[in-house]
Image 1 (cartoon, helix red, strand yellow):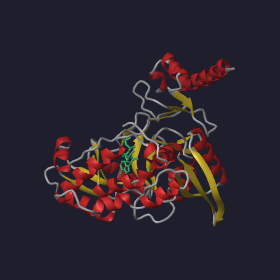
Image 2 (cartoon, protein in one colour):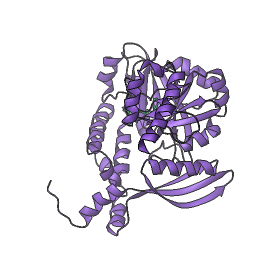
Image 3 (tube, protein in one colour):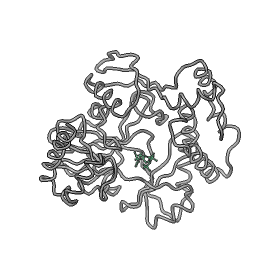
Image 4 (tube, helix red, strand yellow):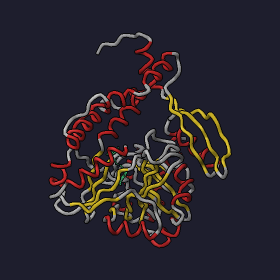
Length: 385
Ligand code: ATP
């Protein structure tokens, strides 16, 4: 039976391979061993013959989508700098723009056949963004008619998103989409900033705030921008050279404090360096922007809400996070539940109600590792550390 299933998969992939010259740049044997090791797997949630890469395969990054007529590379990792005054001149020799770094989650939107799909960083179809894009990008179909060779890279952000517990402070309800890049297919080059800004404007796509151009020899306007972002509680910037390279990210001190505050309850679920990294970023950026490392406020901010949290877990409640999310269709909500099941995320639906044209759903994610992490300590067990 297993062998039969694998054979069906192999045939399905072979038909894609026969039609897609980009995929044929890598020998079929390499793909077949990747299939056998589940480094490449079928994409669930669509009728189209699509696969996603769970790991890099011969230069194709994790999250890449392969189809008969399409190849959408995974979104690249953006290097981070910790200090602007030395980092910027080290990497930029020409002018650059500073785009607001929006705190949310990344999707790539693309057209395949008659469908428009949104996929996450790891290459899963995101049922939420696939359902909601028409609310924010009403001219997306027209865009793909005119530019079938482009994918739209977008941050989905706001308190009503189903995945992340942080969002820009100026979004008070639901979500917003922010288009931050246009990716040329199949090779995955991101369009240079000004070419992208012109297209975003032409199609009325919402985008992150753009500042600049700035020059590496005069960083005081960039430092001033980051002090403003700090005061407004925004996450940071992605710096993009006018020619399209390089890209660098830099975040505000406060965004690191927020990360730490939000993650505390889920400590058993994240890598052990998570806090240290944010602490180091906080210290360096605060020192660079304000000349000191801050006093009392950071601790107050990071520990806010923890007393109530500890009391709840000590009384036996599991560690959980609650989300309230709007869908245009019930089908999309069911698809999201299936997605969580595949991703082994434990979810309890608390409420479903109609709200105008939307189905509004409240659900909570239960975190078993974080629950065990805190419970063990609160129940008095010893550990050797
Ligand atoms: P990595 O990129 O190393 O995987 P990560 O997934 O944790 O790290 P971040 O460190 O948050 O991501 O930063 C990169 C992400 O920032 C991008 O993948 C994108 O989703 C998001 N982002 C938000 N605003 C922008 C923007 N203006 N330009 C580019 N990316 C942006």
